[in-house]
Amino acid sequence: MIITVQKMKEVFTYCNKMYFGGKMARPKLSTGRSTYYVARTYCIPNYKTRRCGGIEIRFSEMFDLTEEDLINVMCHEMIHLNLYRRFILEKGGHGPRWHQMANELNEKYGLNIIQTYTDPPKQVGKLTFGEKIWQFIYNTFIFKEI
Ligand SMILES: [Zn+2]
Image 1: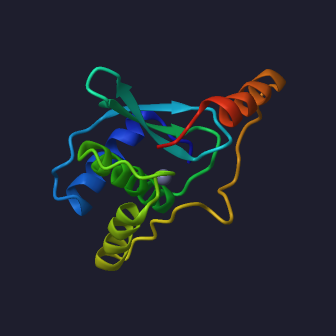
Image 2: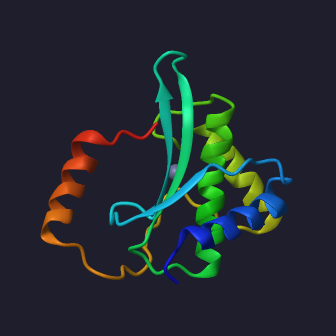
């Protein structure tokens, strides 16, 4: 299944209700065409307060995800969201607090929230040459996950 923002809204609402006690406010949701990640949670810095000024969850349209993948990946991102909102910033994004929450949800609900895919989902569609170059530059030199 190819993700859409509408589908993301539905999955977010479902995960929030089932696994996060309905306590998570929905952040901005968007899709992109990255082949470097299945999904990412961005923290937009507010330089005045030196804190997170806004958060966005973005799913890539370039992978064929099952319904189960969608739920697990959304939960993965929602753990980042939860930590960002509590101003807990771990190096690389997947520190002990992230892993603790992932393990708890996996054990409690039989989920399969993982840090990275060893066997990534099937890629769908092709990037243009220009997109490939831009993504390489962006991911190598610009994007820094926190
Ligand atoms: Zn992550």
